[in-house]
Image (cartoon, rainbow, N blue to C red):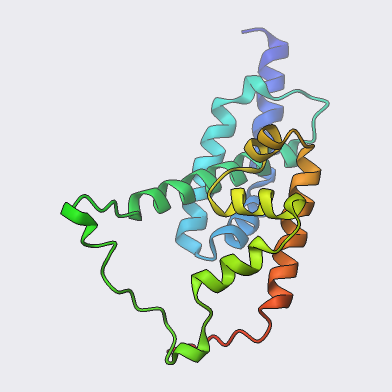
Length: 178
């Protein structure tokens, strides 16, 4: 390793050390738990050190490190959600067909899924298609490709469809059971 490489490594490491307090604060905003934030900070620091060769001097260092942290947090969250997802493998889908507690005390306090679908089906196709695809689990990029639209257009149409649905369901009564 050359002297120049050693200086570059020490500069990288010192910037990373100087950023630790800011990283911990950002980790706390993501996790809202001090221990999880410390774990996220440690994992981010290690990942940044492992990928030091991918950092270019003309790139915002803080933004680069925070992006790493955000991506680690999102990936961990998705992994946790996947691990908590139950797949019903019983005969006749017994668990899926069991009545579920909706969280509402009275039938008047909620809309049925059919009513919500009816409202969505009344949207113009330009809003209905991206919105229903998004509800079905498609990512923005996938919707943009399938509908041959710019991703910004897809995002705005989903946003406006969601806002419209909220307006139409404003008399929706959610009863908190706590």
